[in-house]
Length: 243
Image (cartoon, rainbow, N blue to C red; front, side, top):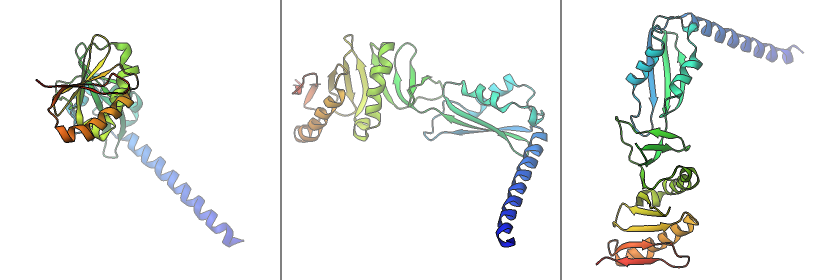
């Protein structure tokens, strides 16, 4: 009987020790005074939409007496919410160490397209808008022309996601132009052709036709023979030669 109970007692004792230790560490941490601010910007793309100095400036503007304050008096959730309001921030997490330093891990948003509408803005992977930055210009797909707000979510985002998530097309398509008839023109990185996609309808099927042309046609006649490629028609591709 004792052999059966002994493992249970050891487990309960260990659990009690962990709970006690965790409570003790938290209590000691909260009793500390904030001695400094450490900011870690998580940035897989090496972009610089936000900087350490900007974040510190924002914190000190809203909490001028934070240095020297008791750690327990800092509402970390409010602090996270303050930073999360920055359009280029995806998520912020705040915590303090036993040394008294306030740490912030900040994840930036990842832009996938730049829209040249009004002052211009980026859109990230989640469809969120990001303002342009004076610190950094992201090398992403660019959309210009007659861009209407109503088409951004229903037409542009699906088209951009299709291009950017495809290894081949993301390396080929450099820019998209929207004309006055709400038709799309693709500008490739190589060749300099205007690729007339037309309306957004069945755009994936149109890209399949274009891929066949790239694979079979351009490999034979070269990239620079045509100045315009028209994908509007259902069962054919119309190519206009350069003069």
